[in-house]
Image 1 (cartoon, rainbow over the protein chains, first blue to last red):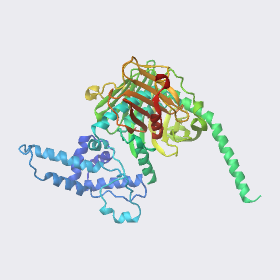
Image 2: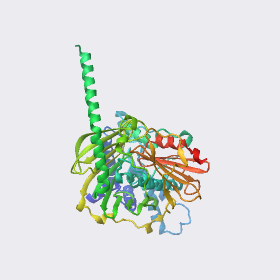
Image 3: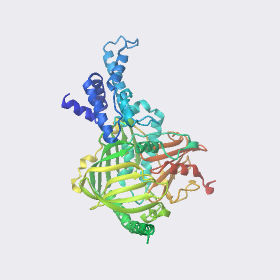
Image 4: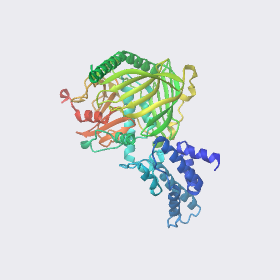
Length: 213
Length: 326
């Protein structure tokens, strides 16, 4: 594999590519087994660095992406069927989207406890593609998981926070740090039953899970 | 003397020494925090930093310039979707590429209430313990650590690593009352004064590229010294009213109050339902900020701040129309 391709993969992992480039690379991942293997290896290395002792492997991506593509390429009847030139384009877009979704769905599922110990090694080949890390290509995954309502919530909360940061005058003001959450993190609005409001937030729970690993 | 009393004696002596060290550290810690507050607002600086939260690492860049026209500041994400906050004397403008929106808030007078001095936050009765200790080299600069530890579950703690020469913040760690880290920020490169590239203050986005949100905070809000109509029957220990503003005129309801313990601050927004986009009731999050919304008597009450969820929730649930306003 060329050095350039390796650099592209590395950038994809760091979320430095545009969405279009990401889609293009996802398409390549679906057809280039060597590239796909490298991608999986990169993940394994990163997971080991971030979580020493973890033996959870990222495997089977190529097979999943190929399966998605195979499914997409099956002939279907649609109003687009007469536009033959559109077929490859739409197929690429959908398959690439599926591939990217496979790539970006990397966080541990709720309640999931990462396997540890030798037992994990023996079953690693049967494990689905799940990485304990979140990739910074988050916006793509948000597109499938966010609804318009939370967006309205988040804009409102953003406005509240902007005003809050202007009004709050406390002794230990840390300047720009107050605005970092707006720039850094796509808003997560986890509306919960107010009658049963938790003592710890969703994030607290997540962090607890991360720290307990 | 047998072994046990000797150990006990040693333990008591060491406790005494550490208590003295902490108590003795407090004035020094306050002094460092005052230096930080001044430096962060009055100096010109620029740098790249990494922000880590929820196992996600993001890179951002800050340019902060202070001149005769006040503060000019631009904070933006280097990787991922383009998100930036531009702050100057006109107010704050926030551009979020991933939601294709711009949110703006005009400059406001912050408060008629005096800022709480740092002395009010120090001590078990006031919510935090302050201490200094440790030196490190961060982004090529020698930094001193100032630690602020919460004494209860109603507030978060901070570790500040401040440049020894100027007091500017080089590393920041937010942690909860169990000292569990919630977020970290650390500069990887840093420049000061004339080395700051002013061209980076220019926004990389045009409002025309996005669906511009109307200013969500109502116009004609006035800051006042009067007591809020809506206020919590009780507050978490150490919190006091720090600011109060409301919409001028009799039409509609909009009231914004800020409560602070001297370090953490919590905003309470009371608005008529339907006056703006509705927020689902319950707990929400904006990065390290927690929010809690409830609807009551045709009003939407939202409490938001960089405090634990239990704090915003307890304040929201205590909100009631003041006796004088009934």
